[in-house]
Length: 216
Image 1 (tube, rainbow, N blue to C red):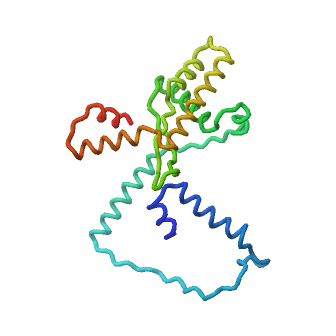
Image 2 (cartoon, rainbow, N blue to C red; image 1 turned 90 degrees about the vertical axis):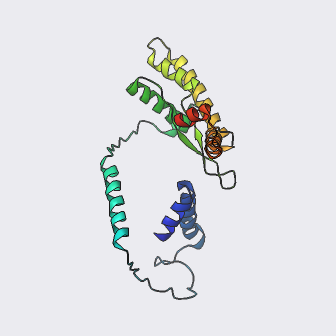
Image 3 (tube, rainbow, N blue to C red; image 1 turned 135 degrees about the horizontal axis):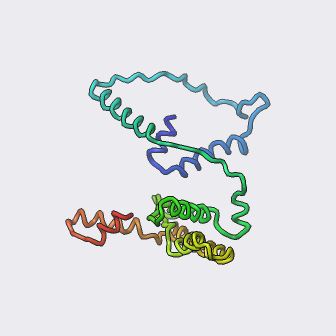
């Protein structure tokens, strides 16, 4: 538990996933187990027994913790979650049609949102930037001119299946290229946000950065 909290406070979820994947795979694939289920090898020392930590917290600290817990519980109780299992097809079919599964799902979300809200909206998808030292994330924008063209074709009863498929493939290609660019440091959202922070520090008024960061 301590290790989990430590990594969650210092890294994004995929990093934590890699750590645990390596830890579990090392036991199974490299070290191995005895027939009785214990790890292979001879212990070099007897590990110390665990002892329960007891904390003496002042009343003020306890009150803050309880208040934060109530806020967290209220947020959790406000979430309405429904899970639907779709087993009609999976990423294999998407790859068969030579479209990125991620891009396919993002386009489906664009279509679903348009049918529900009747309009397009800015959409955020995180892209990892671990190619760079201390890289974390960059923003990918699935709502593009190409994705809007495909959504409109899907809503147009006069559009043919071929036209819709061709537009979907183009939209997926644009999205995938945008994701790759974001991974390689060619995104724009983080750069704009950095400029916005600098303007605040230098007390420079920039209407362009205000609008860009507000919509971002």
